[in-house]
Every structure is written in structure tokens, then in C-alpha cells.
Amino acid sequence: MRTLIDIDCGDLAPACGFECGLCVQEIGETLEGLDGVHRVAQNLDNHIVVDHDPAKVGAEDFLKAMATLPSRLEGTFRATIVESGPEEEG
Image (cartoon, rainbow, N blue to C red):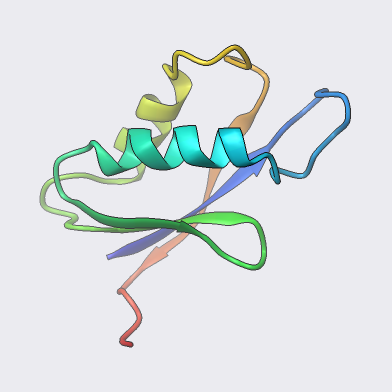
């Protein structure tokens, strides 16, 4: 399954539109650490793309994991599930 997650950086200065490499890396490493996650990437629309086994992990698990990140920016961004569906071939 493929799940897209939108990240809103809220009131960060500057409002980065989720382009900070540190945040991308931290979120990616956190999600990749979940059992059942196959791949994490950022797409051209600045969404986090998570390919995963839905029998092991799902959208709510991703949101919970991101909400507890031990980051200096903890609490400043909001994650929203954009869509979930089958992984694309290729």
C-alpha cells in the first residue's frame, strides 16, 4: 500500500513548506523504523510517500510516530493523510 502524508510547518519562520532537509531526514528515519514500512520518500508535491504492508502498519501509526518525534521542532508541524492506495508499479 502507498500512503501520502502532507506536512504543514505551521508558524515556523520562515514557513518552509516542508523543504528542510533535517525534518525530511528525521521523519523518514522515524517512519522507516516502523515494522512493515518498505520505503519512505518525498515526492515533487512535498508529500511524504510511504510504501508499506497494511497488515502491519497504517496511516494512524504514521501520524502517532511523527507526533512523538524527539525534535527541536516538535509540535510545530502537522501531518495529515492525503491518500492511501495501492503501490505504483515501477
